[in-house]
Length: 164
Length: 353
Image (cartoon, each protein chain N blue to C red):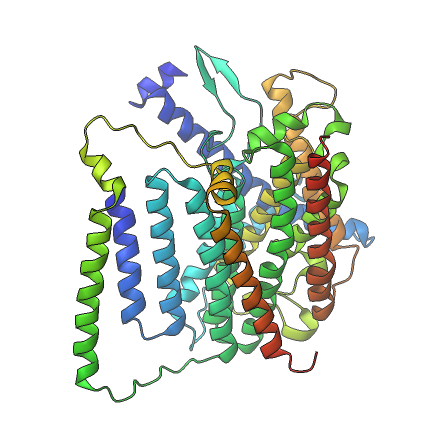
């Protein structure tokens, strides 16, 4: 199961990068989101999987595709002339990012507890637990995020509607 | 049952799963195709016409026109399968499936009858057993996926009417999803759980304890949003004969068109099942404390088909909204209503009711 979902995720991501057609690239991204949702399920977190599908594929990607269709760019655009240095910089940054990510994952307490034998199986996440986690343990972060989103929303309205 | 399972070299659990999947999905597909006929007969009844009653098997067996389904099926299979010249071929093929599959699998989590015990094992009458952790988030997630079928069918046809129809439909679906979600969240809150089995259990068998009585505003919002979600008539902006021909499925013919139509009706069935589950006590039989399994399934089917009929009824009664009216209704009426509903029930719960 893990291999299936991981393959869907990786192939979707690759397809999105290599695909010239914007809409098909967007669909590849949807496949990636589905793969990630499947991985969440395997990690005993069905709530995160459902929210991933509802929020990312059901809303955000739809809006992205919507905008692409509205601009109606059927033609594939030629890339602007690239400078070779850009490639090298991107490769270096990518390697750094990969090293950092792997280090972070390997040093996380979750991975350490996997090595310890006889560790308790994690309980499946439920919506109730998610609620308590958000409103009891991470209340400040949650409120700040809400405020940020509100600010972004007001900003969007102010930008698009010059004369209210 | 165990014997049958061992004959087929399967464990009873897997056998039961397969049986459930086959029953549920074939039932939905059958009901969806029957509903294409019900729609036409219903519209004829409402408009004082006769409707399709002529098709007959071997020219004799008419069964009040139900043979029309067979005739339609044969016709769709033998029609020429046209793909427009400039269409994106791959996506043009993919789109009907992307529309059909979410419409079908959204039903998986809904219990269509009470659970029963046999040989010390509890059998649940829903494809996904309760306690799967997804609960009612699952049909919402799958419902969100239905947009892709419409959007892709529209875009891949490479036809401006199609794109216009697809964009109008997807904009409507995305806008109404928010009001719908808030209505469902209110139910999660008053139930204290988000599993459909729990939602049904807390509603009980007395009709005045069902969510329709406790949250009438939530029901109005949810039901209205379901019309937008399924692209049914007061809000069917995917189509519009006078403006954009048949909208997103203008270029579709033969079996691909049939799949898109079946997707719409399967979606309608899932939506009615959701309404029955959330607001009308699911499989609960009014005034019967412990109904038999068959009775509970019959009760659920009756409720579901009633709402499926309401969908047809309203389609042929109300005229189509204008696009700005639809957006106005979605954002300025339905969303505040469901928010008010949510806050009101939160307040009531805080008062200890």
